Image (spheres, rainbow, N blue to C red):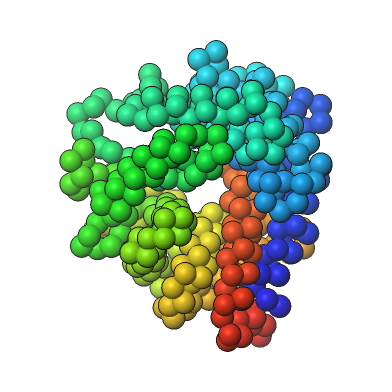
Length: 396
């Protein structure tokens, strides 16, 4: 089987059907995300950032794959819930709500806003709804207002050790392209320029080739738990954002630099004993503060597959392909659940399923379908330009 066919069929005949069949709340709107391995809802709370992610997913499929009315209706199901139940009067987004939409946790997490903006933008394109388009624009600029203090009154730090977080420039580099159809061109290019600078010059350490999660305000490194923190999945995901920008701008140097960084992160974070990419690491090899540091997570491996497939499509480098095969074999062997559908999210260090849920507070309808779509499209390009046989090898 060709890789493109694997990703396409898994997306359309497995993953999306799983969420269509099990996640829609037909009584109160929105989506259930706490779903066990068999598709049964085990908790009915709704998390706004996952509501946004799923509404984005179905809007994106409508826009990019096929204008199926069912997909548009499922997207609207989430958009309406977010608009009606997920927002404060000031335009901030609650972290979670009950199944009926009663707010449970205050808007302390800017990522709820980011994924709402992505969802509004994609849905506006799909539906032509001008009011949702304006809401996407308003949400985007509200995010920019909060970027220097994302948690607002819910910030816990005292300010005595101010550190810059990688998460915001990373997500903005993708968010602004997602909002391309609703934002002014100058705003898009300005935000892209700033994101490239922050990601590739400030958070990318020139000596090690690794992406740090936090740096000092002047860009220097801080010798503390947070200052030494590496999140390999974040760094790798950001690099495929950089590759997309490099393609957009025909910037070969940026594509090559992002590709080199993907390889550096994988070489540092790959578990040489059991395989797979570690969840968190310490840049100096000291004990990480996160007790779950050695778990193997679905999204980290999926983002690695996306990044490697994009990098190989652009560079045809043998080292990139070797890493792709290694991550592919590990990921499909350990995370995929062909019997019940979708992917497991959490493995222990040995690669055994730690939690057999398919969705929860942090895992929803986003990373798996997005990765399947991105890899499908990358491999269509690879297979059309590469003469050697890249069919999937049968496992013995």
